[in-house]
Image 1 (cartoon, rainbow, N blue to C red):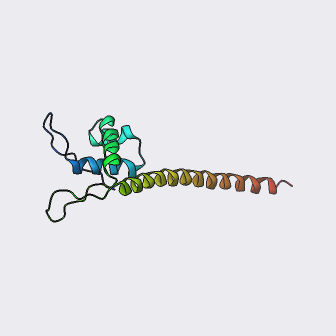
Image 2: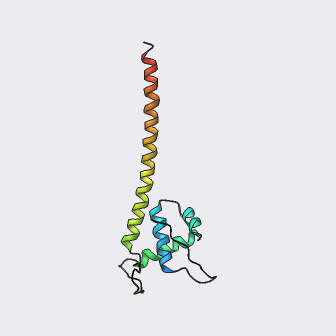
Image 3: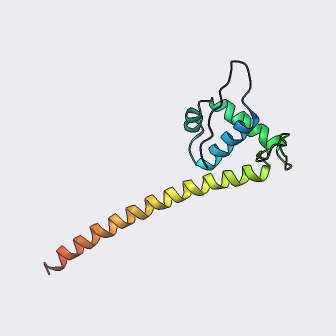
Length: 122
C-alpha cells in the first residue's frame, strides 16, 4: 500500500475522512511501528490510534462515501481493516523468516568451510 499524501490542513480543521482511512490502512499494512508511520505522515500517533478506533467502531458495515463522483473510494470497512492488519503481521513474519534464512545460510557456509579444513587433517 502506498503512503497517502498529507492534505493541506488549516489550523483547527479536521483531516478529510479519506486521508484518515488511507493513513490507517497504510499503518496497518506497512508492518511498521505506530510512531514511525505517524512521523512519516506528519500526524500524531494519538490521531492514528483514535482514527483506527473510530473506523473499527463505525466500520462494521460496508459504507460508501457520500461523493457520487466517479472513482470515489468507498469508506473503510471492518473487513478492510482486518485484512490490512493481517498484511502487516505477515510482512513482519516474512522479515523474521528472511533474517532466519540468511543466518542459516551463513552458518552452513561457515560449517562447510570448517569441515573441509578438518577433513584434510585426518
